[in-house]
Image 1 (tube, rainbow, N blue to C red):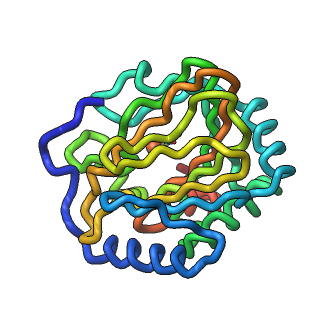
Image 2 (tube, rainbow, N blue to C red):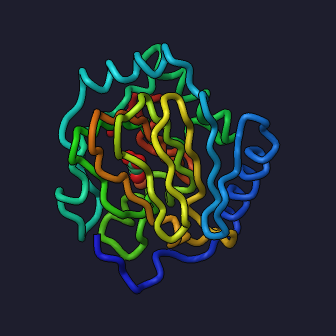
Length: 235
Ligand SMILES: O=C(O)CCC(=O)C(=O)O
Ligand SMILES: [Fe+2]
């Protein structure tokens, strides 16, 4: 997508507090390794999810995948050529994994959007983008009403990829290669709670093999669609 020169959002004390609480929890967790970047707060955790759960999630993705979509006003489908699917948070197995991820970050699972599965075949990619919402775009009022800004992203790589498929942060100086079960988490916001433009990242093209991941995006407040599902009220 084109990179706007307009500020993507304003500082926020509430978002800043979420950022420092989650960072402190990750730093205190011996499983987590902080990645060396002055621009992006990111951690990795090898073998976060066990092999059986990784294999099972790959099967769920294969059974449900469809072409991925983009929210942006500016992007085109050429920016995201993978296939993806929503993982039903109420399904047995998914719920436990959902909670396992939320617990690692210390965020209430209700703040998480539906976990997304993604599959990249050779040549498929997710071009540079930000996970936070650009508060000047037309979708923002809807996002604000459904839980507000995205705070943290958690991704798990579900298989080994022969070549390619790394997650690259060109401004953060980070490049993470897929490893089965590896968790990658980062804060999309800066210390003052405003969107951190240096979190720009790309799912690089797979060269050989197939890449499977699950991604979870957390909101600053409970995610409204989840709340509606829980109470059974219409969307
Ligand atoms: O595939 C990747 O490595 C990145 C995926 C991503 O950026 C996302 O799902 O938001
Ligand atoms: Fe992303």
